[in-house]
Length: 253
Image 1 (tube, rainbow, N blue to C red):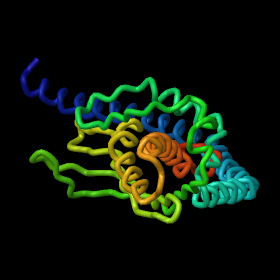
Image 2: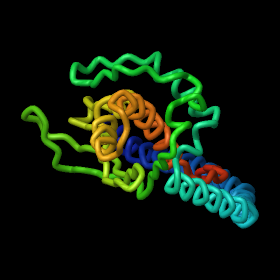
Image 3: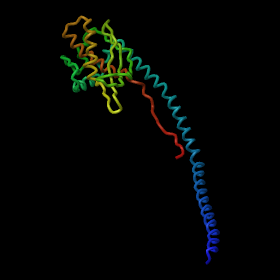
Image 4: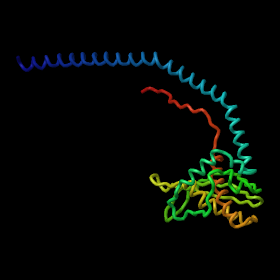
């Protein structure tokens, strides 16, 4: 066969083969697109309906729980008002007894932590504090963030809380550190024991100097009051409980 005839055959054959291949690929793509459209027609309305149903139901739940949430908030306000009047109302609560037991078993690794010479009983109702006329008020609890903290030539973000402490007629604002964040991999939290032994005790001792008790009573009261304050801060952080439900809207994948 001459080269001319071979070239003519190739010219006819190649376009026919390409045309057939393109027809097959178009047919395959069309089939896929039909499947996608069928899927969308079948499931998208169901998903949209389900999403609307969930949103409607969640709103119904929110409306139904609002009364209970408000009741919780009112009860917490009643509790904080009681703490402002006299925090000794917590002496008989089981939570305080548990807190004292855990505290007595906790050791601090910080060299600067103060060590009280006076031990407190695990049953707070037997404390010296329960036998005296010494109202202790705690109020105005607030948390704080310090973006420009500096310590040992290092910067950190610091978190703390303040509250107003009243012993009898003496009163002062107390600040207690909670946490320091040096970087994404290094942070340090102040334990309850450290808060009590180092930061709270000193403030309480200073206020007790203005009250006429024996030195031994002051030291005992300082240990008891500081522990009571440390536990009380847990009450201030309570928030009304709400129902939680999370879901993600479904989109095309």
